[in-house]
Figure 1 (cartoon, rainbow, N blue to C red):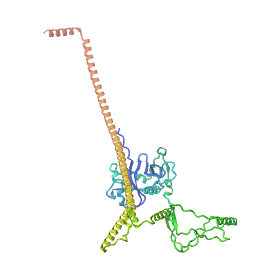
Figure 2: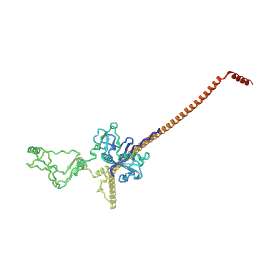
Figure 3: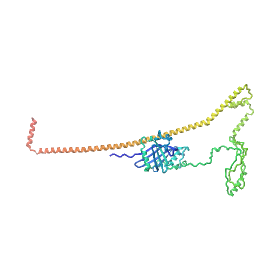
Figure 4: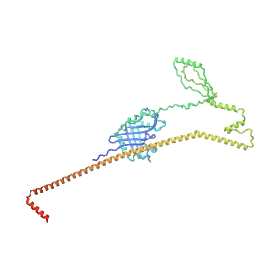
Length: 501
């Protein structure tokens, strides 16, 4: 007896694009849809591989959307520009020529999906703060509106009929969630709050922010600059006032020492070494260790010029050694040390003509300009060109690595899809073969039963014929036994005479 064919089911893993608006889109290497018509159980999950802070290697983050939380479900075949801009066509895993070959599944959720991650993690942060994919994934986990984009090339084998059936079932709210075993997968169930402050950064203040590296440079002094108080004084009780006054008297009695300058450290030249502090008037209570207000800078203060004591000492030592040395010896030292361009024309040399002087001056100027240009080019190459080349090479390498990784993930997803399609086809072929075997077995059974019945009928007919023949022989034998003896003897004599003749 033939079996009825089973209803269609959907179980596919595809690489898709997921967007929450017209500007933020993320490419997922694994998007799984599972649905069974017989039990009305299904699941929707998105998997992202990312580098998580304080974790080694790449970790998998899974966003599972409960079918019961789907409020509205719309399947656009083909998609439109409002759901899928034309700029996203190149981002699809399977390239298509136009938006007419794009399918968009739009989901409106009552509650955001659940995030499954490794246990023992309070908040998730990317290892790279500039990882934009992680930020978009966090927003997708928090969003209640998702657009999932496919390409028609991904449904060439199985067709879009199972996807349409699943979308209709979601719209009718008759799909139950497939339970997920967290213990077997070694993950824990969280929600979008696991991303912590990453999805909700603190508000920015309007005040200026200061960098620690910017404070390392010395302050610039300007003539006639006016200092303004930056710290407010707060009033305290009379007991603390008396203690502060005694402490201030003790601090005024203590001697003040200037810090010695070490060799090789920058020292200030032409900078006054003392500062004038405004003394607090009696009767005005102040807090201990409260910064005092600086007095106005006098007009004699000039911008600070820093120099190094070691360089100054070297110059003084060289000047002392050159004292008493002839000019010719100094010129020879400069030429041997490679500072020929610093030499001027000797005063004792008589110049024959103005043309020779002009030619020699132009030659020296050309040599000097050539040296300066070469030095400038070397400095530019070392400071700007080489860092730019290194940055460009690193960027190209990182982009190439990302492209290779994306291509590998795409190929892996395609291979997984082909394997799943092959398994589905094998199951379908196996079901067809089993049904054909059942049909053939049933036909053979009917044929064997017919042949058995025919054989039984033949046996019964042959039995009847044999029985009739036996009855006839028995009747004849009985007649022969009941006949008199003389006719038998005559019959025997007649037979014997015939035989002798």
